[in-house]
Length: 165
Image 1 (cartoon, rainbow, N blue to C red):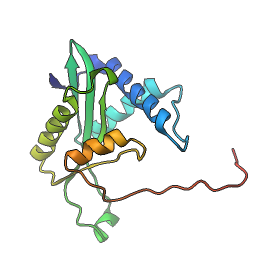
Image 2: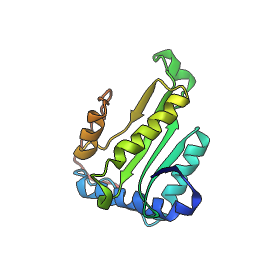
Image 3: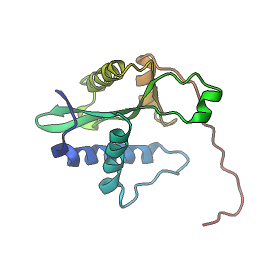
């Protein structure tokens, strides 16, 4: 069952965000991600506040009374300088899509995506953007299968020298 976020599920949302971050830590070849001691307590609140401030939504996949997946998305905002070199169509941004490891393979990701795409269409968005961690091949394949393609890439290089703290 897919529902809109309810505060009674906050602890389940926190659990899912931690599960995703732990997975990102496992696949981060650059070793730049971390699970800060305050992550579990604060990240869900930051995400939910960002949704509230940007016409966003959070939808939850519920199985036997427990959240087993979620999607968060918001409406993209532009700065004045963005209009100098970009058409700036109204766009939605998927900020999180998480399916618990135990619940994968049940088409929950597809259901959550469909719900968010429905919301973005209702909000008159013309495009949907999503940032995907480069080492997360599962997610990249999922989004490509759903019709998404790469428009921008972030390149990174570690430079040698003395590290300053």
